[in-house]
Image (tube, rainbow, N blue to C red):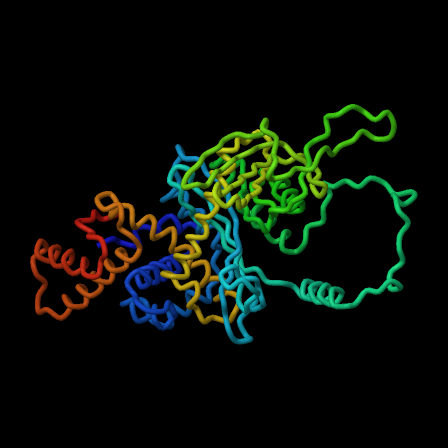
Length: 453
């Protein structure tokens, strides 16, 4: 049997012994239990030392989760020979009721509309060699009263009809006395301020142990303020622009002889990109894929962008679709830029596993500390499960989370049965019984597993 407590000594400098022991019981219960992951369910499967009151105390204890995530990653996951990317994304958890701390309406990509629920923003380190994401920091995103007021004012302004006499027309041209503005001096909105603080804390924890260069964010952060936020942290942003983004080639023509030098050249046409920017072309199943790369300008950005445009054309129907990726790192090749952005999706698998297996959608807490602990435990279990799966996958590469849960559930059943016997069987026979029962319910055979301790 794998000793869960043996995985947690790395947390002892940051948590007291009682909290570490409680966490080990909760991890063991999550691995063995069926059904929804609630405090009552955890107490039923935790066994000795995991009563309902103990589980309740744990969830209402303040825990420095950022340090816990990093300590576990550093001791059990980190590979000095590997290269890592920093990624971030938002996870929306649907919730009903009115009393849960931070309850609001957030846009959910799964539903395609704003839904009542909670929002958590997670930072993750993505391994380029293993092509896996490991959550390292999770924070509850709670909107302030000022944000609510600003959102309400914006909606009201959009609903107010504007006539010809409601607003005075400004004279054409630049207002007299106006000065050039520094585009790099952006004012971050509250969302970006919270994320910036998270990144700063994460980089402080990592220190010089991992030389991070790039941060990957989804298309929601494909804008100038987000780029300046990431650059202020000493990283280069990799993200996606809107498909209709107005991009311009830098002007390289002659000087007009008067006025400032022209900055913006010809606007790009995604279907007629000059051949000199074409990097790669493939044709598969009547679909032609053309990848182009160039340094381009956008009027909302203060600096040049390293832009990669992927255009797919169906050769029979002539229908086209394209994606515009960009980075503030002008030296990054198109292969790496595409690969790094595709690795961003690994964090979505973290959210999927946390919801499907570890109770991110199940908890019923309403207070701030308990809600934060429930979300962090769910994503912390993603890293724990990966470490526990290693010895199984040496002989069975397809061994998954469902097999792992079936293995621990089988051990739980065997332990309960052995307590009913008048005397314990021989160790060899006991080991055979445990392996046989633990394999029931597994999709892939577990085989013999060495103790991870």
